Length: 139
Image (cartoon, rainbow, N blue to C red; front, side, top):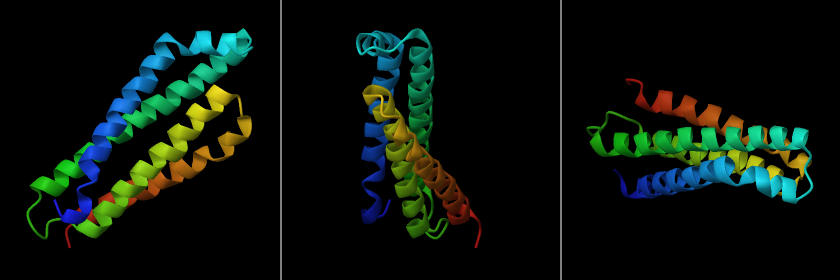
């Protein structure tokens, strides 16, 4: 792994840990939290689904970051385009922050307009995955 990419593995580990934390909260405390903040049954179901979507995609992309970090460590010199791979990793991390993060904040604060930010994360993921495909394609 090049010096410029040393952040990828720690970021993957932190993303994985926080994804598990948010998933556990969704499973064990979110419903009570929402009810205690005035949500009716229909809103609890809707918000729980949004939060769980954020956690699911958060964990999927934490694993993707981990895979990119491993790819950078095991790939022979010249096998991948490292600069593009690093950009792909950065976009995948940004996707976690914008997509999952906006859903978490939307649900916890009942701020629906934050849903407008969520697609930014989705676009970051699409571009990140596309760049990853490009960076690993044979020259």
